[in-house]
Length: 129
Length: 129
DNA sequence: CGGGATCCCCGTAGATACTG
DNA sequence: CAGTATCTACGGGGATCCCG
Image 1 (tube, rainbow over the protein chains, first blue to last red):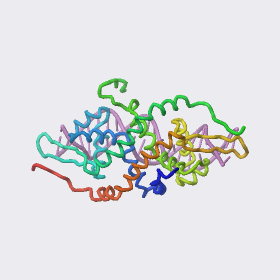
Image 2 (image 1 turned 90 degrees about the vertical axis):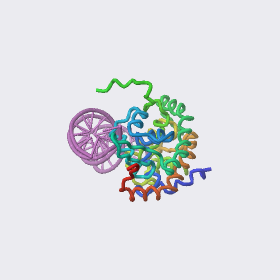
Image 3 (image 1 turned 180 degrees about the vertical axis):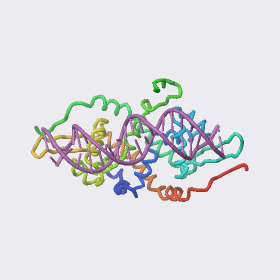
Image 4 (image 1 turned 60 degrees about the vertical axis):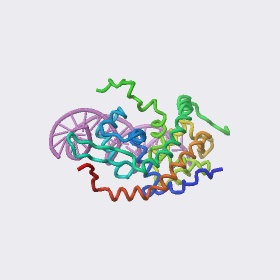
């Protein structure tokens, strides 16, 4: 019955673990929002900033840089005045969209239940007394 | 002071968003490892700790508590000497395994490419000169 | 306009010690 | 065995300034 979690084998081993590595990337505050925004279309820095809303330029720049480093997002600089930089998902970045979507679907489907469980949390649960 | 944040339009903000909420949970350092360990079978606290290896009991306890709060993990206390507590996935927790597994599969499949991109990162990319 | 550099606050994770 | 309490260190993340 547990065969649907077959990839878990690599979870152990702190650093070399791909999953922990990837999750540390997408698990941060802004990466998901950036990917979501770019999933629709290419955007410039400030467009991205406006789209997301509550992100500082510091964190947006940092997030974008990491995504670019990892090859999930492409950064294209146009040396014009005023400067212009376009950000877009790479094929690799796009390939992440579907797994993410599945997770998002789960989140949407179960969020209410989780919220409910969180509120109802309180009484202990003892067996065998 | 920034209590002036109620711009409801752009505020697809942190709380209301199920995805950010869920990702903040599973995105942390240990939750995924705990879920992975429990995906196989029910475990006691120290079994879990041993299974994961490099987790402090502080963080393990905290992680388990949050998972229990959210209804993803059940905690069963047996009032015996010595004390015994069993942790197991709830149906809700099990339902998360598959979406997670898909993400894990992606991570495994693309981790090498990401690592490579990370190492090759260096030269800029300019258009329209 | 894009974003690096700097300063600082604060949450979070680790280690250790103590309790039931 | 299964935690909780306390203390500290580290780093994420915001604000601000400044430069290309």
